[in-house]
Length: 355
Figure 1: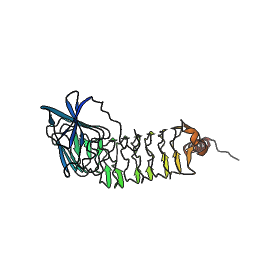
Figure 2 (figure 1 turned 90 degrees about the vertical axis):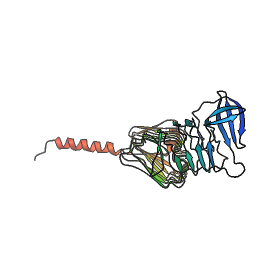
Figure 3 (figure 1 turned 180 degrees about the vertical axis):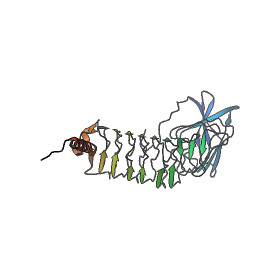
Figure 4 (figure 1 turned 180 degrees about the horizontal axis):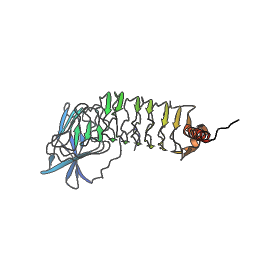
């Protein structure tokens, strides 16, 4: 995958194409071996095509074929503002890059939609309104924020790209891929009390305008590329009771973080997790036993960068040699306090000396 291709891998299998044809001078379809159609391109033709309804079926050479999917970046050159689906549409999944379109502002989802593949809303710079048909019970849009969730509201799929501030409900366990991607006006994100968030998926906050975020203690995984290329990001915070276990590949690559303290339970820092963070001067590990750091995790950071860890905490992994000469050890306050408590108990139980 090219790094400048802000996309992701598709979960869909390759289909065998037997013919490609154009309909109505601006829609191109692939006819598959199984007699289904994939819409592969919508072009701007004879004036602005501001609104388009994807048909359920298309006639070609005397035969009628069902449209089952939108191909990657099919809408890229369309200049569409609104996208609809025929009420009889049987499209049940939006694939990677299905809605890739810089001009798209409003989408009405297919009535039988059941799945959103990773990257379905990638690079939708202006998308602000998603409408769920009444007949579709798999998804729901919040009236106040216009955010898209699954029916149980434990997966946050999409937030309008014009959002400036957002509070994540405590029902959300997963922030899905690309949920906040390209939210360039985003300044503040908070989490409701008693948050149940466990995972931030790949690319969830990439290319957004966020400057600071304080993660809830329930968070366990920050997935690869979660905050990639979020240039304005300067600060990330974790509470004392944080359950974070891992920061995955390129999670904070190309950000402007200054100092990072990874909580006690975090024992995995993956490849390039903090790569190309030119203002990052320090990373502190709160782990009491070990941290596994993979190669290039801190490559391209500020001159004079250092790692701070407790005495007795081991740094392991392929990234350890790169940190060996810039690691500073400090006393473990928990061990020191334990020794002090034990000493006080011993002194307290000793008999008093008499003259």
